[in-house]
Length: 439
Image 1: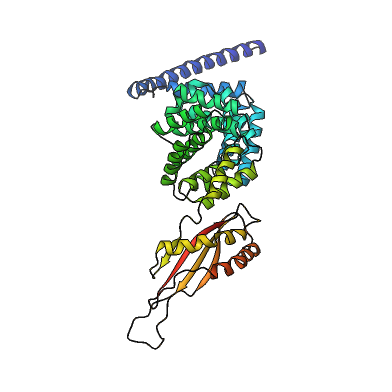
Image 2: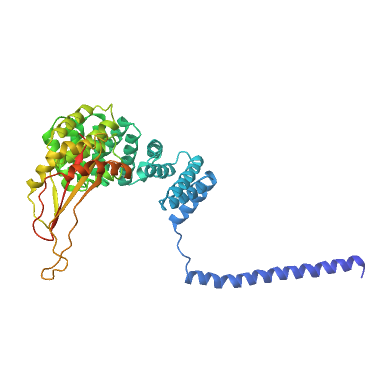
């Protein structure tokens, strides 16, 4: 066989083998496909979750078209975790992270809202107002529940007010209560804050309307503070009878006046806490305290439009008979008038000891003890009896220990000469306490 013939025979043999291999491969594939098809009919595939598929596609699309979205959300999450720690250091970290998030997506509301909340807690009112206004501008209304939107507007109005933007605050809060969204959360407080803003603006009639609405709402908010704000509006509107009623109700609801001494938020108007304390103690009545607090108001806000009204209260309190009451404790009996009359006679001299401190009130406590049973007397029970003493305590205003000692040194000789009754029964005593304010 020639070489050419040998090559032809070899090619034929390879061609037949390749064809046979292909046929066998196709047959094998067909044989395997049949059981698979039967298995699919027996166990149909799980249905496709269109929502999850759409969400995945949306997330993929957002990541592709807006690559800042993922790091933005990470920064917001980190900031929220820091804010939950409720410490000053963690709040500073949260504010920094939220600033980074805002730089990535400056037209997204979430980071502005959380940074505004952080500034609200820090009482950085101007920054809070700016951030919450931005959050409001960029919020998609359809995506936010009415209650959350009302809470945003309430805090925005508070921040605007404390930042000195009273007109903006009035608009924000008024639109919130009239739109009906305030009914979803804290409607009473929103009305109350609107009333507080209007007092600061001098809109006293509108303020009383808002404050009455606060008391009539389904959730009245802080009722004691609302009554005390009403007392302030009525007093400045020259309605002293109504002011007295509201101040008395505020005192009834909050005997310790923690609403004013430890407020959740500072009072909006400068010196307003002192003014309301003056009204509350004037209704008690405790003229010593009323006098000191109205003096504190005038000292804090000498150019206030309400200075003249405060000075009228000062004049009335100075003319009051002091002490209004003398509180007796202890086991010995003593008639109230027998304690009050001597104290009133000595009051001009006692008040002179505070002449250089007109905004200070002290409490003078005088203890009188009766005769003691002999130590060896075993026929009668022995009782603990306080010894005779004269002590001065702080009541209103800041006093150092040295200042308090000086006041006590001035008052002790005067108090020692008071013609107070001496207990006659053995092993008994009483302490007579009353307040003293400067002339």
